[in-house]
Length: 329
Ligand code: UDP
Ligand code: MG
Image (spheres, rainbow, N blue to C red):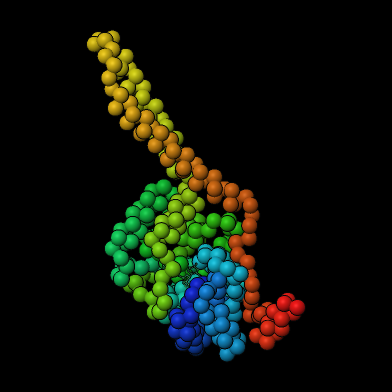
């Protein structure tokens, strides 16, 4: 039985050795307790620090360490997809490199899958300790909104940390869309999921790659990817404003018949025009958001591009210097 640990890494130079130490410790324990063999598959997502060198070194030390290195930063979602594609295990786990997803939970998770009752062991945070208040507030609001809008259930506080059977991994891979929102994809494919709750852990080293703005973009991606309610909302706005306009017309006609037609109401007219054109632009924006996703989707661009793997490492430094020299000549 082989278990693959898939770890997307972006500028994780500092966290990497700590993660490796903890993962190997858990792996050794599970080899004894469950008879499981491991592979550690790291995805270097175009890091600008020494992450790639760290991975090369780890691979030289330990043949269980495999890595893929992207040609640039493609985002965590692309890293997850590449990792799942290249993982060879019968079970595949997805973890962050910063130890916010404690590998120590893996034995329990594997137990759950081995009963045969579950296809996936997933984790969720029950607290958001150590997170800025405002961010927690918006995160909660996001989960409320998306669950109202989408048929796919998105669990509040769910992390990407999960252990899946080969069958479920293959189903996830069968979703080849370009705009990937993993939380939605994992839920969309179905299967039986057992949830493990744990307290939020802060990252061991380095810093988070998610700014407020990138999280906002990500949440829009989630909504657009897994719900068409905003489009229906646009139509609803249209109907609503038509109804208001109709009532307004009747009111004005009746008033004119009764009281005559004094020329006033210019300010209110401006407000109405502004409001209506605002709503129109807003709705066009919604349509545009879906259109842009469709546009990206039909281009069928690859989700990621690999520059180097452990099987095909880059040539060593001296050779590279020779190549530069040859180019200059
Ligand atoms: N990550 C990645 N590509 C990115 C951003 C993040 O592969 O463009 C990885 C990162 O190295 C880490 C995981 O995704 O292993 C989660 O990132 P982070 O800890 O910054 O997010 P947070 O835990 O704060 O949500
Ligand atoms: Mg993290």
